[in-house]
Length: 56
Image 1: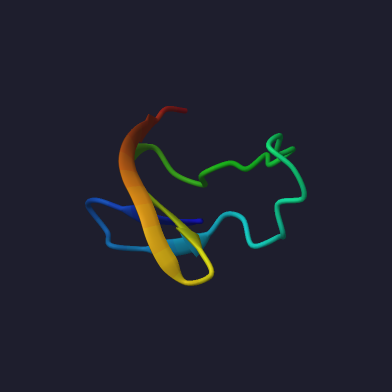
Image 2 (image 1 turned 45 degrees about the vertical axis):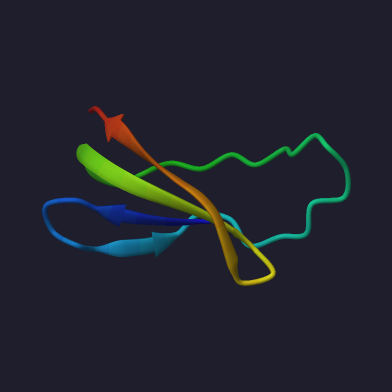
């Protein structure tokens, strides 16, 4: 799972661990406010993307 800040284009890796079942304990945070595009991939195949708004 990668996050890309819409304004700065900074990219951070949010999650890279194996998913063992249909429930994931993934927790993450974004280090600056603004709009972020989240890309979700499995085995290097992009499954979906969505936009989130991070606030202070």
